[in-house]
Amino acid sequence: MGSSFGQLFRIMTWGESHGGGVGVVIDGCPPRLELSEEDIQRELDRRRPGQSEIVTQRSEADRCRILSGVFEGRTLGTPISILVKNKDAKPEAYSEIKTAFRPSHADFTYEAKYGVRNWQGGGRASARETVGRVAAGAVARKLLGKLSQGRFEIIAYVTQIHEVVARIDRASVRPEDVERNAVRCPDGAAAELMTALIQSVRTEGDSVGGVIECVIRGLEAGLGEPVFDKLEADLAKAMLSLPASKGFEIGSGFAATRMRGSEHNDPFEMQGKRVRTTTNNSGGVQGGISNGEDLYFRVAFKPTATIARDQKTVTASHEETTLTARGRHDPCVLPRAVPIVEAMAALVLCDHALRQRATAISDFGNRIAES
Image (cartoon, rainbow, N blue to C red; front, side):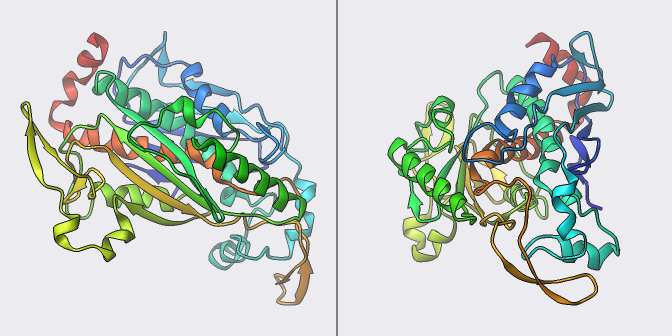
């Protein structure tokens, strides 16, 4: 069912939206990395529902429990299993979609593919599946920090909600700037407009989408595996695998189509002993391989498919009907998607960092323990 991701740092997420719980199994994490449930919980708290007035009010603490792979505070090199129990599941709220397909949701396509589906909150198609991704991303992030000796930094933030566009300097934005408001937009004035818009569309029973940008600093040159496993190709797959994502661009992205080569090319220069570029239209990746500059990309998210308005649809028996979806849903997925984007980026980069060092994995644990 495509529930696994990665090659050397591999994960498999499991669980349904209104089942007993959700989680992830991580295979390929090197031994002797210091790891605690608190390391993972910090990121889960940023993703969890009910954290503000502009997100779904499903009440989940999302407390994680490490079931395997860690002993006395360090990874063993064996599979790491992480569990998050579902506490506030209300499957009865979805009884109307047992037979009726929600427009632009996965109900019809799951039924068409498998002939059966979990209609309670969408099952695996629910964004609740991303709990496992965020948990695994927290582990990947900590490993990347060790490998880079603390230089690695990844920051995602909301740059647009519907037609409200923020002005953000990606070169100077800090994590604390992102977390200053519930919408996770570093531009305070734009954040106020975004918040008001989200509250307004929620009152109307509607939803809005937007754009998240992510910048990664301290990345070494040389990550990426051409031809088919180019770094930006794997990042694109990671981001487009997220619920509600509809577009991906890296560096100058689609804007490059309006530029000439003389404008778009990034000239090289020497800074000390390092090869650098004077501009960064490439977004930190050239030929599918990181060049050591800041890596940055953007992900477009559609409006939440489930809305509290009458919509035309059909039933599993092919009868036309009208559906008003119930349940607890985000009027805009962007604020909670920020840590999910960071998690998926960390998973891709961690996997490629291990692949880059594949011939020296035997002494990986020693370097981690010594750092």
